Image 1 (cartoon, rainbow, N blue to C red):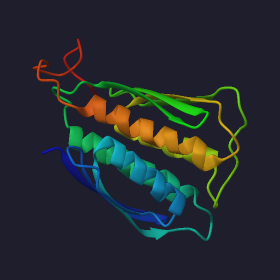
Image 2: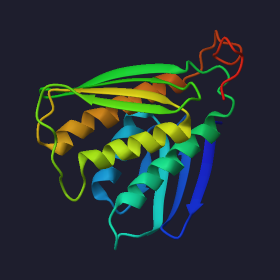
Image 3: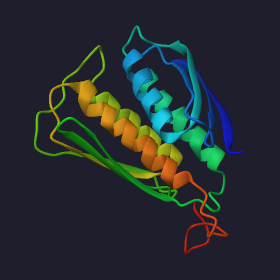
Image 4: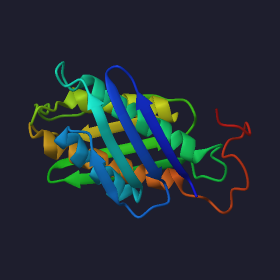
Amino acid sequence: MRKAIISRKTKETQIRVKLNIDGSGRAKINTRIGFLDHMLELFAFWGFFDLELKLNKGDFQVDIHHVNEDVGLVLGQAFKQALGDRKGIKRLGDASVPMEEITANVALDLSGRGSFNLSVSKGNYPVSKEGYEFNYAKQFLDTFSKQLGMNLNIKLENPNPDLHASLEPIFKALGKALDEATQIDRRRKGIPSTKGVID
């Protein structure tokens, strides 16, 4: 079973995450950032990941920056631990998800080399909502990608000022693409790399 439990404790945050990659999409999430909780629930549901994530301490007297980033950090570490040497996985995944006129295109590679790029094509840049901002989502995804060792490229087409409508298809598509990449390919007998190792 590809599972992991990760705890992180700093002077700024205390977070615990429990992950089962081969789950059914059940989520129990409380980061005390309601908008982020909802996005992660969508991610888990569409990725068929069982995910429990709880914030025990956060420095909200400053802002949500540290909590938002550290949630991405522990989630990336949990996926990395649960995947182990990545033997037999498909490694590559992609998904496109629409929401009205908006479309999120996600392509990823569990290459061991963490990188992140998000481009926004024609449209209106999403504005903040309920204390959350588009740049917070970018920060979360950047940290998540680099801790996991995932090359993540996202293209958001025709966004509008509604942050919810712009981010929801991104997190759904991310779940679907990561589900595809983490699936076991029965034809693949070893590490999915011509080098023979992913590090």
